[in-house]
Length: 188
Length: 187
Image (cartoon, rainbow over all chains, first blue to last red):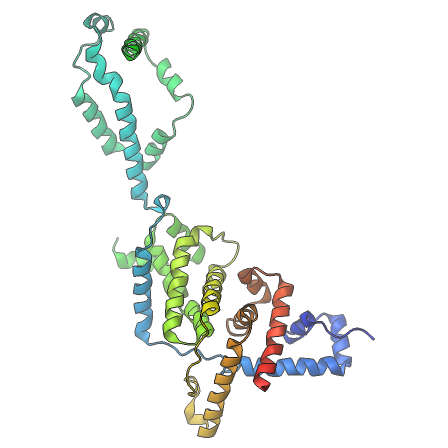
């Protein structure tokens, strides 16, 4: 004689999913049949309409509930990275501004470089001034797309090298002098 | 695009697309999720606490937690299953600190009173209260398993996912829940 149905198997039998081999035991075993009949009775009482009752709230409740939830989640602080696309663009723009401001000392201090040096480089003091920088800034702000901003935020490792390579010989020479002037001033 | 047009467009999306839209910053997608799932979530909560006010509070809590934690939804189950998981946790926490109040004796609102005699209606109402009282006395996991299996009609596998248990444990809990109900109803 095989063993009686385990709890798992009795649940399977309730669901009509009992293994064929065990079903043949159930068909022949009065004890297991009685156990199962009792479980079915409890299920019937529990699952019947009297036990399954959830009163339907007022039809107005659902609209009210949606508004309640909306108000509650509005008080929840949203993680900064889960903001709208606009927030990403704003963040990228701010980063671009910081990037340009970070570069600006090299440009604003052109006036500090001796005139002779500037003249040698073919540059005139004043041609790169505040107005040029802000013109550049406003241009960036107007034309900045999200994808562009991401490029600005994540420049490739070779970007600086490429930029340097694109300079002409005289521009490289001027750059070296400006850099030297900066270093000299920084050490004083 | 008007707000109503956006809402209409979002309501046409499936759950996975709504979750993606929400995580991409489309706040209205969450409203669509609430609108779609509020009824089953409320019903689940009601079955735990058996009164409207607490059920509404719990259901709201479920959605607030979902709002905060939706980035943790991996999409390897239905959104409804994930919401049930949140809901069961919220409800189990609640019933752990507060015993449910069983509503006063009254006939079920879903009984068609025209087709039954008054004595049977009262008897059914009494039986309903007894069943609910018995369910309320079950240990939390057995209670959750029974509610999800019998009333929410979820599979053992889905319940296992919600409760973080094995299928075998869910079946064992269900079996013991029925056994305990039998004992409680007989007493």
